[in-house]
Every structure is written in structure tokens, then in C-alpha cells.
Image (cartoon, rainbow, N blue to C red):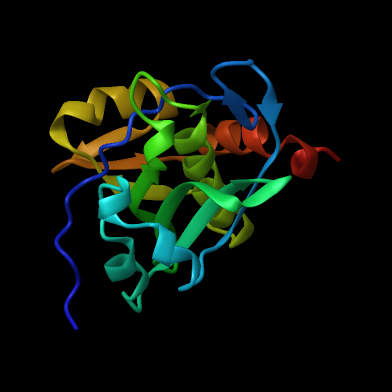
Length: 179
């Protein structure tokens, strides 16, 4: 089984929050990230507005697919991320907000930033000092540099280095970094 073609991440980091924010009420909701299961992916289809074939991503043996949910409503997937452990850093293959969380009428802000922060936390917890790499669409390289503090290292590849990784971790995982 071959790897799917790398398309580059093309999600907009709408806002760096400490959770996710409801765009209507302004309320903040605590989130959690967990592995998605096959049954949950039945609701995550291109017919339902998702941009990527997450079933195909889920079936790649070198990746794990994570879901972002609101703690009090963990049956509703707010966003997904596909991550690989490369032994010295984590690699983000795909990040996507749920269809109701992108565009002008999105329901929640902060979903993509939350998923990037989670990859940074996984890297930090694994002893990789928070190093996270990903491929970007050309048009978004400057956006990721400005919003995430990522560094373009060439050929559309970006890296989040320890200082910026820790900044994202502290923003999204405040309770776990206090001590």
C-alpha cells in the first residue's frame, strides 16, 4: 500500500485561542484530542463537506488520525489531524476543520491552532523538544510563519521549533503546563 500524495496543509489559522471560541456567543469551550475510530469516520465524508478522504488517511499504517472535540460534546468532531512520529519529530500530514468550522459562517474559531498545538505537545511529551514539521500550500507559507511562528526550510516544508512550539503548548494546554 503506497502513501497518498502529499498535498500540503491548506487550513487557515483563524485565531490562536486557549480552547475554541463560539463565533456567535464568544463563549470559550474546553477541548480534548483523541484518536478517531473507524465508526466515527463514517460521519466524516466528502459528501458531508469534508475536503479530504479521512478514511484513506486513517488506513495509512504510518499515521494516526486525531479528532478535536468539545469536552462536554465529544461526539461532535470539530476538526481532524493526521500525525506521524518520525523518531525525532512529529510530522503533520493533514489538518482540517469540520465543514461547519470554516468559511465566513464558521461556528468555532481556534480549531486548526488547537490541532497544531496538540502535535507540538505530542512532540514535546515524546522528548523531541516540540519539533513539528509539515508541508504547506505555497500561498500559505507566510501565513504559517506569521501565525504559528513556523520556519520555512525550503521546498514548501515548514518546521515549528521548540520556542514557538512551547508557546502554542502553553496557550492550549495551560493546565498541563502549570507547575
